[in-house]
Length: 278
Length: 318
Image (cartoon, rainbow over all chains, first blue to last red; front, side):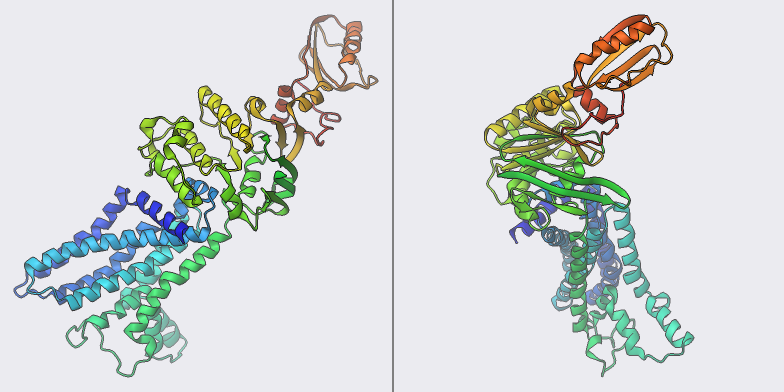
């Protein structure tokens, strides 16, 4: 355990000195500020509406930042050969994978919190209320969402030995699990619907397609919006089926998000454990 | 007690054989020079010992720990200067040493270590990204010395060091050895290992072609000394085939080169040449380890084992 923390501490020390990474993470801070400022200039600014917009932006933008901050964590060490120093010590490869996950998660969550502090200041100045029930829940759900992308990014990094393979894997993961999920008309779920329902004539039911959507980190993140927002007040949010099965409930989406943080990491560790270096 | 015990260790990468049934023993307390040309399989061997690579066949132990099943316990007790050491660009020298100590979970005096390896004090608090190769090697050495290991494995430690750095490295290896530390030291430069090593093994194409103390290797080479005879015109049809001690003969331009396994045979060779041609110069070199190693390093591998090298080797000095 102490070795995991040693790796995490030193990795954090190394990566927080990267100016490039701070630049990438600054983007999220800027977008947060812009959204809050834009809604704040309305006649009757409503923080919940701003958070609603921010939620969508987070679904698209936060994975990119999580990936940018994590994809080189292990593959980069193999490409530059710093891994020779790391594994010449009695370091366990599990400590490397978990330690990197901790430090990169901390890094992304840290920049997220900077964004929220900036957003909080804007909210105090421009909005009638901080609406802590809404904004607090959003912060917690965003942190869970960070894990669901840092985990797979570290896993991809652990399973690849060069920068180019790591970036290809991480970009592919982002497109498949985020871009092709969020935009309803042009999504993986839409493609499945076309394949099963219209081409093969299979009647699988709406719950099946909703479940496929909910299985992806971006889909389950969007599904957790029902914790905060009432569909009757937000027409962009489709109404929920009263008798829907548990696997479409928002709480189950949190379970799925946590699984995305952990399961790929285990697979990545398994690949890294068997990898030959040098 | 043996520090390193390698038995029939092989490593294949696809069709390529990097290491072919290597047997090697390093005794506790000795300084062992692992010599060979680039690409001979030295780093592959070391990477197998460190658990970076998995053996295709064979086995090895380091300080009694199996390299496959007890890799972490093994690495706890050794210090490593890895091949092509690369530091974290944004961590300082002191942070590297501290990192190594924390991973080993041992106390460390970073100042004393960095001072000992001769890293300039001005560099201690600077990020290692701006270090020269020589500074990187010194830092790597400091990291290897963390925790006063029982065995030091140094993979090409002198690469990037200037002559002064190399001399300091030799002193440091001697100090460690005097302290009872076993040192396993790979290099492609003979003079480096010659100066500090108790024993030397020469690895060529994944195979140990010669092994012994410096003196043993020198004795071995005395049965294999070169003789060059320059003549005005190289005659046709001379033959030393009936002289048993002539291992090989070649002709280049106006020079006849023979390799004799008994120095006493040189005079007979000269007499034969003198009968058929006018001798202009004779160069008779003493047998040397350099000559031996040069032959191996130039890629002309002998097939023999420890004491047979050269005896049936077909190659010839140019």
